[in-house]
Image (cartoon, rainbow over all chains, first blue to last red; front, side, top):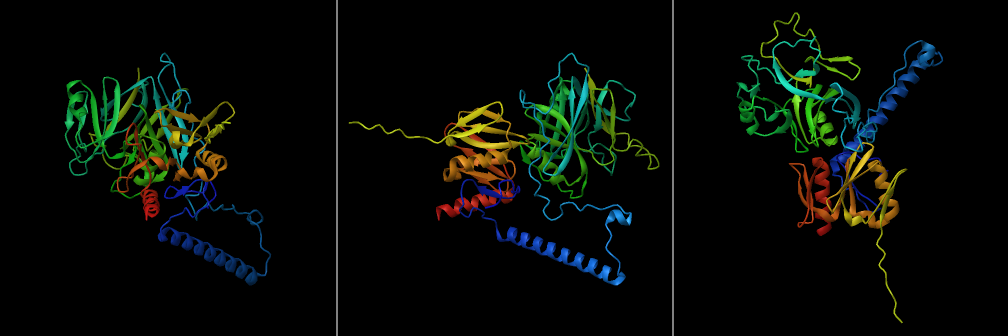
Length: 316
Length: 127
């Protein structure tokens, strides 16, 4: 039986039993054998290299410090899954939420929390006493009412239109259904979900609200697979037990790994936001501005598409 | 002379600095991890949050219940389930439904590989 903490997300273990309880398929065992062989080979190669180097030069082996070079610490490369559960996730015990309990009279701000889930470091932006709208076009970075802004929908490369349905203050600007995730802000209530059709599109039009579509990442607690396999800084807007917040990966992650981390955070629904160089910022409780992405991304790359759009949280 | 037989039901006791939860194993449907916290989803519909990591709860189950603890199965890093309530597994949709088919039904997510292993385990037990 494995040690108690030594379990990966693709394993199961019967508790309180010494019976063989590890019905791993041969492939999984084979993977471990291969990993073991790789470790032995790497150690052997390093030993031969060091031994040979010493023999050839007849000089004593110096430590990195003695050689005046920076010592490189090799991370855990052979079993990246074996790092245990995350230890820095704090949930407010009285509310079960990530965000602190904030008095409604407090000036709006964005609570920023760093945490990691299964080796995926994440930054969480929790807006307090603020409402979400959408904005199309260049944002005013001097607007002191904004406590969080990030790009919302993608722009189509072929015609520079907004990808997927989009409603701006009751006015529909795009009607596409090619991406299934959606986010709406109607009458001060933000909803996030994944569906082919959502009545929230029509409701946003009728009630002067906001609606956009993006890739879905988590649908009712279940990971949504997406085609792009590249790794990038990822962002998402999420709903967990009614709490709305934005999440950003601090490392480049695949869609799958990012979405899995969100699922592991017990997030109910999440949709993607443009990541990588897409620009945005958050204002914390001390009025300090935290930027992400590249503010001058379009400098030297041509004009910013006029349909570039943002989710914007403004103080109430 | 009458002899009174009292059936002693084993309890799982989860004790922290501030509180203590004492519960029969069959009252627990599943336990999910939320970092340093764990949530016990109970048969009466209540959820109890304890400031204990899931790995520590797993150790408590093994230490306190011994072989009887084998009604619990750890699934990945984030979940312990009571196998008595496994009702439905769908590997492709990554769905595991825990239900007594009468009063409650909870759907939890797990990796496809873990669900495949769970299905194989249950298949092997009926053969």
